[in-house]
Amino acid sequence: MELDKVIQQRKSVRKYTDEPVSKEIIESLLESARLAPSAVNYQPWKFIVCTSEEAKCLVRESYPREWFNDAPVYIVACGNHNISWKRADGKDHCNIDVAIAVQHIVLKVHDIGLGTCWVCNFDAQKLKNDLKLEEQWEPIAILPIGYPKEIAGTALYDGKRKSLEEITVWI
Image (tube, rainbow, N blue to C red; front, side, top):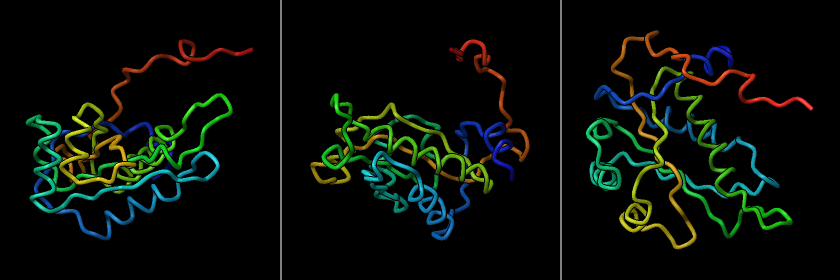
């Protein structure tokens, strides 16, 4: 699929079939994240792949929404502020770097016919404790991943975006 088409057609998916996602597919998603750029190439990220029922329950408890329960896989994207690059004014690029890697996964998910929805509104401290993450790792985003229940081709961009004129300043 062409990149422009992936960007135009990708949308948040909140309904998944119960079809399992293979380890090989998950690894291809993680490879996309691994290749993402990061400030000074520090790569301050770690991805927790939750496929066991026990792990999936822990993730679901941090974001108790009905739609969230159907995904066969969750990837928890974590960042380490101790190893991320800081600009001279102190600006920490950890969250930015992790976001770029997560976006690589999001685009790859759509490209191969899966669905996901970028989730940030979860109880990060609960998830960190429940997954027994080391102190330096902060959960930044959760990606539920699975095969969409929607019919292929219906998950098109809905056009609810600001125009270029609204978001661009030329100087």
